[in-house]
Length: 483
Image (cartoon, rainbow, N blue to C red):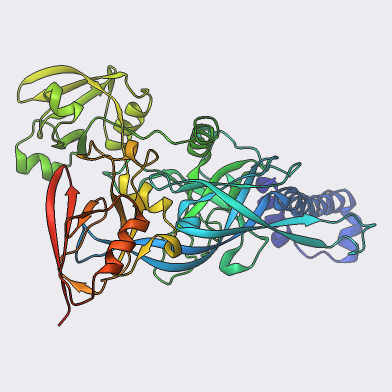
């Protein structure tokens, strides 16, 4: 259709002017050219009608999301310190199951303590609103927010909702026509059109994360909304833009639909997302890196680090090894490495071949599930209920729910520090996220309530000594009153 449209517009511009006599004497020719003009108008009308019908079909499955709560911020001055700040965010989402399952971006709802979803519905012409759209606002439950993929899944109490189908994003082609739906800058039920600029845009060459790049206008508020093809199928979730002005500059990025499908199936049927790893970090080899280290090749994957006590270290992998293949399939970059490891289930052995000097060595490395302990703890806190203002922390009682998330501990009781909330009223280093508090001035604490009670017994002029377990070791944390 686009090809015929471009051709027809060219004919419209290039048609010569004819006098009545010339027109009559060239009747057949004139009729032929007149038919081409009509075809051009028809093509425009068909394109417009197709976009109208597509928008009408997709819009009811796109929702606006309002999230208020507290988010985890990392202190740039101290990598080991995190704090909470209040946030109010609006974004977009996609209904992917008729029983109320909605997918959006994790950054839209991260830290949300109150999440509401606005549905967009069309009334029948016989209804009182004479066919106009109406909105329904529903409370939503956050099922899971996965930081690694920046995807989150919500659930609303409703049935029979209109859904959108997830396409196979591996079939996407550069130049393919796409539409972006969502609520840019809070303007709900908006749609823009563009093309696929790249099917696999990698922002960081040493990161396995890839996006679909499009020039369809995407702005703040579009996050979580669908990027759809001309059949109305979701090819991606609009996630971020590259901009110098803060608004759309024609470089929008969406998470591919195949990633959405994989994460959704894991969340819905297993209750969590598997993130595989073997305990090493790697980067792409460049000519400059190869020259500086004297490597035998200028492309491929170099192992940068091997974590202590990890499967990679136990089998003998070392920093400086060049990774050649996984499961006998050549690995040329970090993205291929991540995808290759992702094909293994947790507990299986990944067959890895490396080059060390002039030797080629094969290993079988157990694949484990990576843990994000601090993030998972932060997802569990409620600021109003878990705040300990004297210490400036958000805390959780150590129980059977938290024990599997933490490394082996000295005791089965205590208070877990989920995040830093403020500086507190004492001076000193203070407890850090991930610490487990066992006692205050020698008095054991087994719950958040008991910690509050113990702290209440001391005056602000008293020095506090907390016994905490940090990274497997016991420490005394000394807090002194401000003078």
